[in-house]
Length: 349
Image (tube, rainbow, N blue to C red):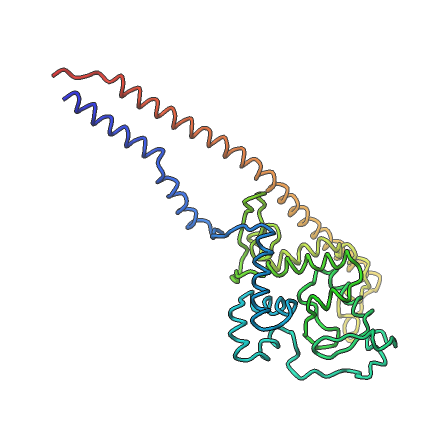
């Protein structure tokens, strides 16, 4: 009886220990996280070399299948969300439709504007004929204007969607055409960096809303949709406008604008005409108040960003302390159960 009691007690102790320290708790935490966290989804972090390899494989596959240049393959892949097989299938059915949808060629037959090329339509200059270039649309411009156009677009962060300079022409410039017209090495390098980021940031994720991803290497939190810092619950378009507004410092100049730009009452003669000085003062006061409101929310946003950064550090320290305390509790519980098992008095038969 004593041996059986000791055996039963020992088995129960083992069950208790598995209950507190088993794998079931981890599985429950994972299941609960997938259900409770609205931003949770499966993702894989890739290194730059791995991304470049995937890019080159897709470009080479499409270029060899359709017999087009790698630059045009990049434009088509970007338009079709990097679905190379879909492009190949549609290209076999209707090649012209694929090229038009990708903005590689115009929907109508190419018309050469100013076929004599005696004068550039942008700068009105008359360079030699060999200094003119055109895309598939047939709109010829001098190389200097192309270079300036590309420089402005690249400085604004545009890369894969640079279009022709002609009005209402949506034909996009491929990479080799842009590189050949950009003389500055630093600008070419910046353009290629934008092209790389723009291509791979156009991911298969098409649902609305920001999704939080954490780099497995540096633990940086970013938005999966736009690649910027994590900004939930704000959508990507709103946070992009907000960051642009903070960077250009446009709000600080509103109070010195022409008073006519602040309203439309100045041209209605039938309305009551107030004293212009009072009107100007009132509008300037409103502009100053709007500036104060903007600065107020900007300071709050900046404070929240600093607070979030500090909270992340504090949370990491707290989680480490909790982990140490949990391991200590598990060790003490195990020692306690083993001590009770060894010191339990044996019952006499």
